[in-house]
Image (cartoon, rainbow, N blue to C red):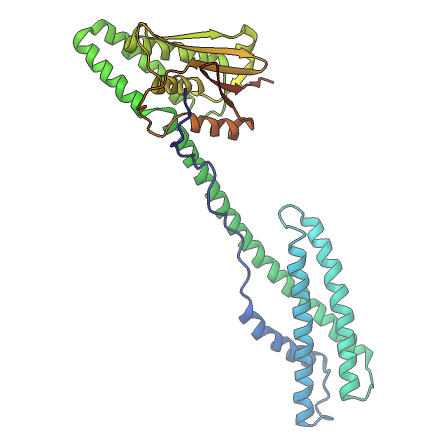
Length: 360
């Protein structure tokens, strides 16, 4: 057997990165609500004494309170985005709530108090009214908690949308992988030759054609039944190989022999991806010359937790390849079992060592 260097590797996973949750575009939200909060909260708490202030002082006072709103907003926004990288609503909801309840007030309260005291220093010569300061701080904290809730709700919605899109992408990739695996399991070249053989037998030997048709049905029934399975028992694979060999015997006669040396215990306790042996046998037939005088002997031998499939190398000068075969089998083994089959040439023979999984 010879690995097909031209065979494309199947795309079992999407080559493009999965979509991530988009960042929130909150510029308009901030442009409107920061000035709104900076003006509304002082009005609600009567922070600015309009009777005592000139028009210029009132304007400057509102500019200052808008600046307070900006500092509080941007600081909490930065904290919120930082916390998102550490805690996730889906996986750590309790920790996320505790972190928000701990971090947000510890930033908002002292910063609000300091900035409002600063306003008193600038506009009222340090005549601090602590009742007004605490009222303003309380309203600011409530407003911040409400706005944080809005932010988190928007983030949650966007993450849910992103997760749905991610799952849809993975499901599509999985479906494409299964379809690709099914295509790789059924060699179109083998199907074409099998149908040609059946057509010839119908004309020349109807009785033999009936046997060939029944055996061919068994072969493809096995393929269709196992297309969605990752692993099958070695016993099932070997039974499938008996049917497949019967087809080969009708087609090639005594030009092909398969020798199996597998213990009874291993047959009932070992697992491997379906259609593995058929791909290796078909690959050997495709790449080697054989005849009745020089038949192709394929050996399937179990030893030390692996199944070795080998044949003598008699390479065809121009071996036809359609890109489906050994390369795909190796990729499937790695993806399904996590182990990589070993390929080697030794003493004029080609070996593929398939790692077996044990039934638990």
